[in-house]
Image 1 (cartoon, rainbow, N blue to C red):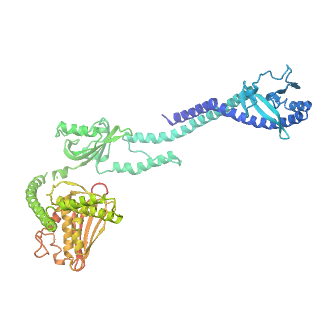
Image 2: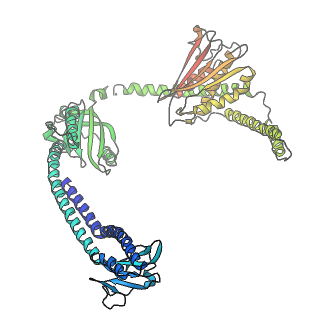
Image 3: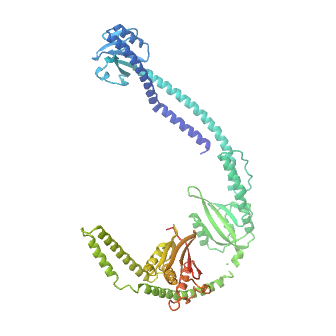
Length: 607
């Protein structure tokens, strides 16, 4: 729908709403306003008339009553004026030229009133097609009766109708002027927009040689024009001068645009391929299934990438690497395809000369990897058994039985209502310690199981805490303080859990053993230097490593522990970290300590 049609439709809808308001809701508002105005008028007049009538009745002066009522007789708003005494007996009515007693047959208005219903009401109310007001007659704070004023609703309805018609006429005239203005305004908008649309249509048809638009306005259309000019000055030259071939087709595969690089690759000019399909470049070297897979991929809305052997205009063959992407509209429907193609003929002849060497090298690597894997698995399992034997030597086979026995006894004892608060606290503390010890044993058993070799997303902090728990008692015994400096929102890693525990356990044990004398400090810290890396550092205040040994610490069978150890711990750690795509570094200062830093790829969401 055009802008002009939208504006006219908008003003028509506004006119309809005003008309509906004018004929449905507006009369109610006018009536309420008129009644409110008359109510104020009647209230004032009722107070004035009631005072005059009250003076006349108070002095039994019927003439004074007559003069007072005749004063209001000429007000054309009132169609009924009557005076009632304190016993609700009608005393008089107002005729057109005189005061008429209620017994006279020539009353101003022949109407029968239900006095019981009328005289007991207060504010304005409708009765028998008229609007009535009842006001008390007072004189010197003494009630002498009631004054009833009646107004015909005919004049009120006539005023409402007249006001409504006038209002609608004014609104209609305003909307007509607005619609005319909208048409004139939309013509100006359409004229400027058509210039931009025409240039965009030409580009869509493959004609990129467009002149910049002359823009003077500062409104949204002017901004659109400036964006278009920026597109002409930046984006189009990048496409035209691109070092790769660019092809744009419609959804049927018919070519709508090619850049100059396409002509250089194929020898075809733009006019020669316009409206044709890229099938003119087929070399006949690919089977039909190759092209079927290509079309199935892009028609499903996915991007296709692959190498393709094509034939140029002169019949020569060349290799290209193609990326073909579907272009969708806002409704998700495919409208075009864009192909970005790079001539890889030279590389292809080279990605061929190396093929035989690569295949041979891959076979050698596979054979050597299989051998190393077997040796590596034996080393890992051997080192794990050594470490666990050192940690669990003091744990008896039935260690869990007394723990759960003690816990059950304390659970039952806690139910004794005669216990003091201090006794309850101590029992609760004992139960927690039993649970902690049972958890420690469970984690030791889990650590002892052979590696599954299955990588999964891991919380680095949780893995570190599990390992620290195993060493906590030993560190306390040696008066070694453990500090944690964990980074917030640390990303997870994808790794084999027990292998990571093996690495951290070895590093922590090395840190502990490097500290001699009366205690020291081990600091475990994590950080994310960038969004793709997680770093874990384990720093000790031990003796340090001599500079001449720094390059040897990761070599198999090298050890600084004299008789203790196999010399495989750090070598295994190095192999595990490298197998996970990470790295491990060491820095040491003799007499001050050593820090091992493990860097691993960050995977998944933050912890």
